[in-house]
Length: 287
Image (cartoon, rainbow, N blue to C red):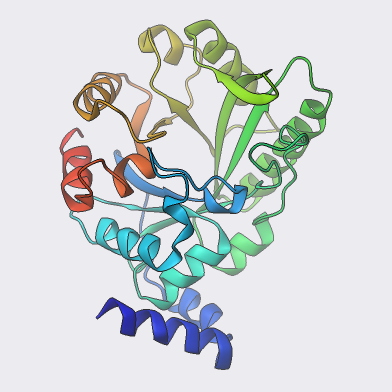
């Protein structure tokens, strides 16, 4: 059955590409509530296809879309974060009606490259998000003290915060302090590093009125989240070896006053038991 739906998507892309914009205009929009559960699916555009022990799990687009549709249909799931190709597929599949939709903006810092920190905005911009009637834009800010490209990435993020705020769209900033270890970019998940990253991200742009943070669960979350008054969503991250421990960490962090929900991708879409609906339902129950 899903194969037939996917064939219709391909047919529309070949013969009627204009229906994508029409579907976006017709889409029933949602409102940001007190608590949010968003499903993240912007990893492939950065060349990050691994999920748990499967190095190319996200390389099968049909499988990814089917998992996304299952997740978005579960009660309590508010929306999705993705790049244009994935969000347009979901539009054509009719999966975004009544959902919050956040477009991913900077995907130029490809995983494993020498230019990874030089994270160019190769995805959505504020104009495109507005034209598609979406609800916000997400950007990744990795601050590497030893990489001069950090400065230009930070400047681009600040400009994106301003252009989104001018249109009253959410600017979702995901900040890290990062370092190269054996040639690969690694995020510093110590409390002090996250406090510094959050402090920098909170001050980006000429206004923080529409800025939200996307943060991982790390030790001492109460001290970490005290670094800002901005609303924050918890980052799901990789598929955890111990799912119960990961969910317990989410549940504790969700008690903090500025933590308003979860943005999770691989940990919910590719659980170790492959039960997408079960993983999503458990995550929703934490709220």
